[in-house]
Length: 38
Image (cartoon, rainbow, N blue to C red; front, side, top):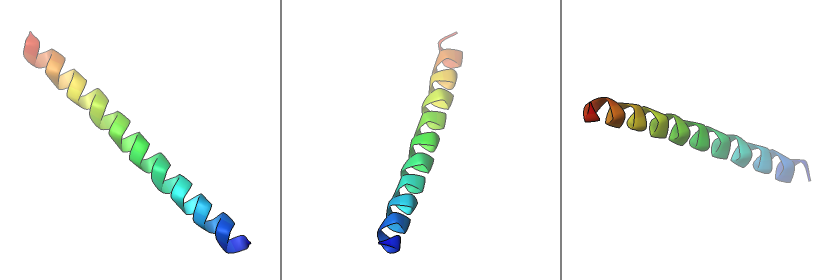
């Protein structure tokens, strides 16, 4: 039981980091794209 909770926690942590990095890259790419348009 505890190993299942641990695995879910690890996967949730990985998913959170992936979403955070993807959001950061999206915001950075949008900023660079807007800067290049001017």
